[in-house]
Image (cartoon, rainbow, N blue to C red; front, side):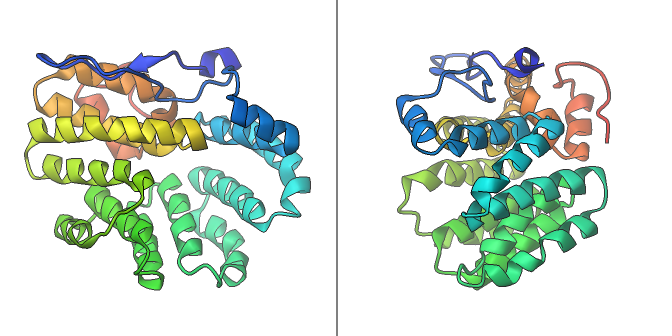
Length: 289
């Protein structure tokens, strides 16, 4: 099963008249050798490599292995509340996807009081559970609450701007992005992603294809360093939509196929149906709920 879930190296879809970008990995490789830093961390902290594998299996939709690894990590998480919360979030996301969002959120509610020293952290994290359940409105609302609790933090503003650009109010996204002070290089990929979405929603697919293509590389670097594969796949999907609308459907299909091992488990059902209708999915099988 691991072999089937391990994705090959892929590069950005080449565009006519443009040089192909350097190869990028859009999905995790379960068999990749860890970097020197990751190997050192795994030696010093034996749970580190297990944690990385959990994040990769979560991205690839292997819910059984996520549960197994979460149980194995509970010994370490008992001494690290932030890891304990993260494990509960992943398990709640799986439950919300397959069962009831309200029950999943209720299981997380005790964490709200434990995280009062980190304004906005609870709602920002819980926003991902809403997204796993396909509740895009709840996703935006949770990030709005997080931003209200910590309006001075650029990350909260950018997260909300991106959510509004993806699922909500484009004018609000534009205003948030215009007011944002983004000193951290780590946020530049999300800023470019948001700008590209605003261009795409504004009927400028050519510009969006360029902007979103530029967002993929920093998000790929973040994924490689921090196992952040789900945002990367979502951005790659938006890039594919822009390419398709700009008349480059072959490049769009290549981009979707590259991100598909993650995208098929984490894209919303309406989005999957739209991609299927546009002929962008790797197969013609209609998406399941």
